Structure formats: structure tokens, C-alpha cells
Image (tube, rainbow, N blue to C red; front, top):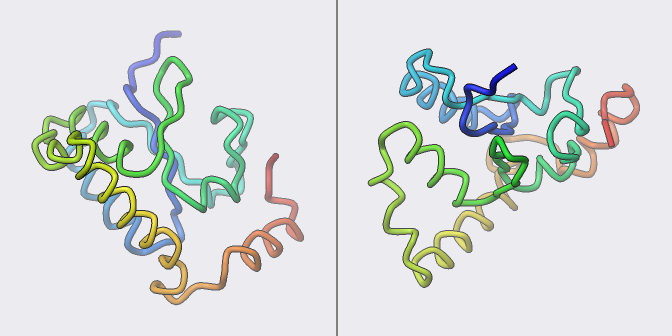
Length: 138
């Protein structure tokens, strides 16, 4: 079977801001299937189907997987997806090494605090609860 997607986006379907971004990207994808959206909060999420990226790792930072299995994360994921969807100009400036490092730093701060900012439990508690339900895949 031939892969039609050009990137898998691992996203947190329980994060309201993440879902808002995914909905925007779904509209831009317009049914072309260029982005394979993978909700890591889904009970059926399996690390082994996603380059070994377990739930806890995926929750820590945004990850993308290219068809060859290469894993990218942080701002590089947004840069790649936006380029694939024909909006590369939005993140083009982050290709500059200095600006790219600053963007990754800012994204890292956001990622560290996104659960708190969206009114959710700390990651350790979310992972523990998910493990109790048998939903964490390694």
C-alpha cells in the first residue's frame, strides 16, 4: 500500500488549543490526506505504530513523523506541515538558525506550561491515570 500522507502529526486531542490548530490544519488539508492526524489521547494510540513515540514523550513536545520514519519535533513540525499545506511562508523565518533557536525556546516554554494554561492536571498525573486504565503504550 502506498503512503499518501507526507507527515504524521501526533497531537493531544484533549488539549483545546491543540484541537483548534488541528481543525485549522484539517481545513487547509481539504481532504487531500497530506497530513495524517494521530490523536495520542485516543485509547487506540500505539507507540509501535508511531516510530516508538510513547504517550508521555508525545505529550511533552509536538512530534511529526515523515514517511521514511524520520521523527521531527518542536517548531520543525509546524514548519514542515505548513510547507506541505502550501503555507510555508508562515514559518519560513524559523529556518534562520538564530530565529529557529528562539522559536524552539518559546515553543518549549509553551509546551512546558500548556497543561496548566489549559486547566489540566500535570503530565505525571495524566500519565499515571492513563496507565491505571491500561491506555499507555510503550
